[in-house]
Image 1 (cartoon, one colour):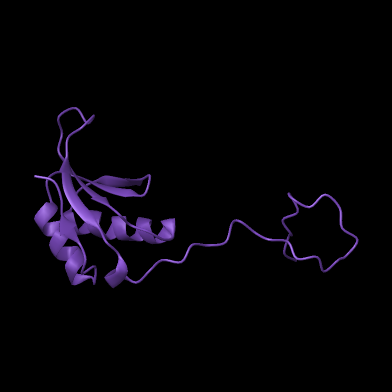
Image 2 (cartoon, one colour):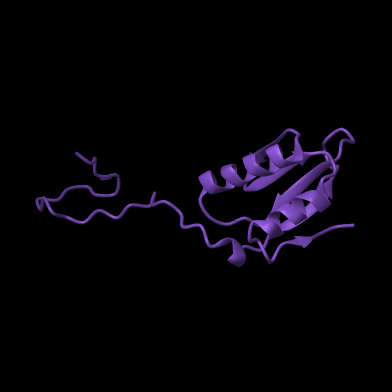
Length: 112
């Protein structure tokens, strides 16, 4: 049985009262509709270089899957935090090629 979200409802005698849910899963747009930016970053990382992928919109699970794919393709570590994918090292060209190959056509190289 599905538990109803009744945080906002104070009292209702109607058992079929529609309760709006704010926690609906996010819809992830198609890869061709995503506008991703690939950049090199060193800020607050102890001088170490990381490849940063920003601009992803959609379900966090899809972002984690994309991050895992990129990390394994580059053969390095990294993480997915705050809607960004962080890959350890300078892999801008490789990441850009992988994203375009996977259908992210609006991906651009940003920064210097």
